[in-house]
Amino acid sequence: MGLDPGKEEQNAALHKVRKRVIETIGRNMDLYGISLSTGHLYGLLFFADKPMTLDEMGSEMKMSKTSMSTGVRTLLDLKMVNKVWEKGSRKDLYEVEYDWYQTFTDFFDIKWRKSVETNIMILRKSMEEIDKLVKEYAEEPDMVEMLHKDKAKLQDAYAYYRWLDRLIDTFENGDIYKLVPKEPPAENE
Amino acid sequence: MGLDPGKEEQNAALHKVRKRVIETIGRNMDLYGISLSTGHLYGLLFFADKPMTLDEMGSEMKMSKTSMSTGVRTLLDLKMVNKVWEKGSRKDLYEVEYDWYQTFTDFFDIKWRKSVETNIMILRKSMEEIDKLVKEYAEEPDMVEMLHKDKAKLQDAYAYYRWLDRLIDTFENGDIYKLVPKEPPAENE
DNA sequence: TACTTTGTACAGTTTTTTCTGTGCGTTCTT
DNA sequence: AAGAACGCACAGAAAAAACTGTACAAAGTA
Figure 1: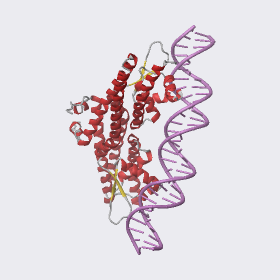
Figure 2: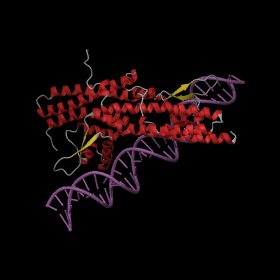
Figure 3: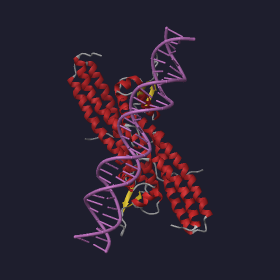
Figure 4: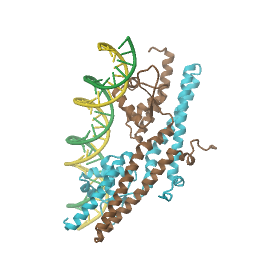
């Protein structure tokens, strides 16, 4: 408390710049299925010079510690922040994962992969089910036709999810960077 | 109304298979930021043999037509369903976009691209702002150091968003399929 | 062992989102 | 031109999500 006037002015200037970025980042976090306030929390941690405690976050965000706790857990689940150990401190410390490429990959691995896998499973099961029904109702041309139509749709969906699965593989094993390198090709402009 | 018993039994069997798939698809739609019921609506349209009207959707989903209207608009915005014209009918007809690869691409183009672009703009602006502050506070080593730290973070974020932008480009121009072909390589299992 | 401190579970409140019914402008029909 | 059907805007109701304060278990400290 009680910085001298010059420091306070500096602080305000820095704060203004940070605030804009934090809000921009926070606003985009809904792409990751994250609430606005948790997005803000992420932005706060992004600029923190050092790992923060829940209490520090709470006072910065002017929110309850409970909210910080749940917010951090959400971010932790997505591996967007990491728990940090510091000797001497009894409090848990958290900092953002600064490797955003990794964060991107983790997001797909955690959220998309799970969906893809259950979808693939259900589709496979449903196609088997349809095959059974085709045999069962072999005498009913209308039914067989409907079944075949449905199966064709499931087959397409199946192929798509398989593709998505392989796409996520390339995120994870880094092959994606062969196609889209991290460093942009030099620009002549 | 009033199908004969055999048909009803067939219908029930088919319905059961469809229901499972619809619910699975619907459940996953939250990845696209879509509510569960809109996800179900999508699933319903997915299996529809022909384009549907809002009234048909409403009676199938047992929901109000207003909800169908907003749900369809959401899906329309994401280009997950298309409006279809049919001669003679005064009602609007809708059907799902069956090219899921296209849907995937559109999703990123519509939702992610926008975020990426505003982020890039804000980051650029903020970095300029920091450069100004560095000059302004050149006499204050602490301030300058903080500014440099922040700028380094912004620079990293900037590079990441540029990468993301180029990644989405590959979705859109189809280059992604060179890396991850639609048809899976033949499996020897 | 008794005393702190920390993180989170839980219940209740506030805020946001979703859903419905009514009503109106538009378009098609006659 | 009058009438009917359609889709959507809007306001209110219902449902879901986010947030808070309290209370308590776990783990450290004296």
